[in-house]
Length: 404
Image (tube, rainbow, N blue to C red):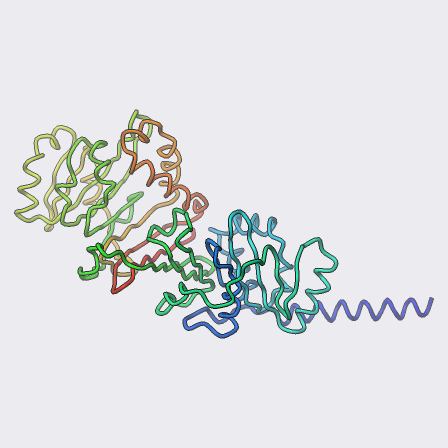
């Protein structure tokens, strides 16, 4: 009996010591990822198979998980994700670097631990049902065949990206609504308790016209459900023409601001209540004169403080003129947008399921579905701001998601 008690005490002391070690050595913060990557981080990325569609390098998974659990926008999503992933408990992750990649429907991991944690996690893997293997102090989970074992070329685009908690790479084969820029793309993600900052970069297209324009710090209205300023009219405006029964592409050809305050989704084709804003110069006045009679039948035009405000209803122009305007966090030479997710997401759900919109305005329908797909879990966000620019050889998109 005495021997049993001694053994039990030794086991309890060992358990307490391990628990104390895990608690005391789990970092509350970590140095963000930045280019150039360390040799250890490059070795992890080199494990990504050449046919993986996307992968993510994480500086300290335990720190990032804590931030995602704290941020109201991601709390629910990360809890659900944790339930589905065969990962060690958060306390065991410590300051380990990790690489995650996706190939087809399978997700794989490589996590490099310090010597003590590697020993503890080995014991955990022996007692868990997680299928894993070890390469030195690196835990491997999921399919590991076909690793490249040399840093992929995409990481070269990380040079100049803002530091982040995670770098995400989407290769040419990757599909997805976000980010709305070409592939391959690399994204830096930084998370705090009330904000998520995302910067994505991709090679610029040869025919892109935004690169020669000077970046501007756009002022956007604050109470619109969606406000956008652009230097080049997006192709989707051809579909918007059908909804407002006016050729607004002609009016906004040199750039404009558009503010959507409401959308009537109860009609056969959804009807946007929006204001279109262009400079009050002779060229725009002449263009507007061609449609003045049609506009006056359903809406109004107001000129004030150097702007022509055109609305296709009786309220949006006045609402825009009364609205407050704030500058975006970053300058942009292609477009800037501010979104109110709580108001826009319900509209996107209805618009995305509208069969008439699918046939009458296919680009707009596809854009609404893509926007709904990546914004679906952001209803807890207070605002979303984004700005796109083409600078040098790269197309860059910056996004800020602020929580309530």
